[in-house]
Image 1 (tube, rainbow, N blue to C red):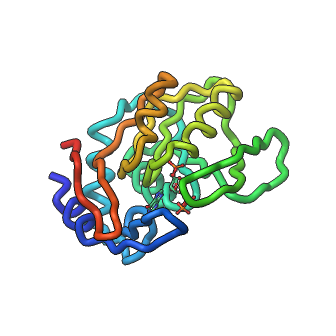
Image 2: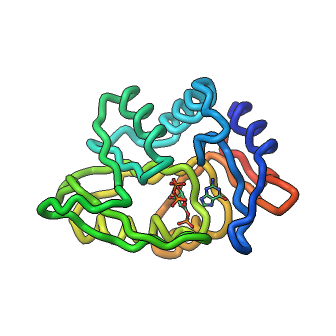
Image 3: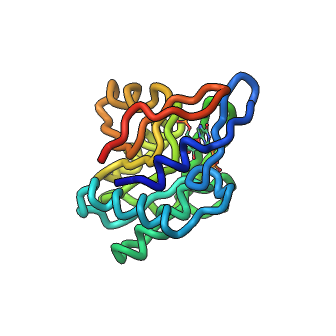
Length: 187
Ligand SMILES: O=P(O)(O)OC[C@H]1O[C@H](OP(=O)(O)OP(=O)(O)O)[C@H](O)[C@@H]1O
Ligand SMILES: Nc1nc2[nH]cnc2c(=O)[nH]1
């Protein structure tokens, strides 16, 4: 299982973003092209790992979007995108995102008290993005049914665990300038 994901990660090129070794992969970048077989392998696996008890899917721009689209079409559940630009709508919530290589703002719209959400994203690294997002959702009064992230690197998952937040991932990798190695695959 997860054969296409595993092989494609082992072939992922690495570039430098400052001191950060950034891997490039179809699921996390859309580059090189995302083949439907890989998207299907990953989203079918996600649906086996999560509870089906959610009424909204939340995707973080940009690379949560193809995952959320596929999951939405398979489940019939709508998705909202946490955007990197403001719309100025009533009730919009702004949060600060900090990753290992970037800082910016994210904007939440159309999530309300009582919503049961599935959060989906491509990568977790420092966990900065998910810490900010889960805190904002708590403020809104939404319930997080599950958080599922395809690729785990770094200590973000344990950082969230210490806060009492469980993040499920499909694969845990290590990244050096030589490339990606697989530490654990959650089949
Ligand atoms: O755990 P963290 O250190 O917070 O990193 C994880 C975040 O980094 C990537 O987002 P990025 O802002 O690069 O967006 P992209 O999807 O547009 O590549 C990824 O999609 C996560 O949202
Ligand atoms: N594509 C990609 N996305 C990331 N998000 C956090 N770290 C990374 C990384 O190394 N590569």
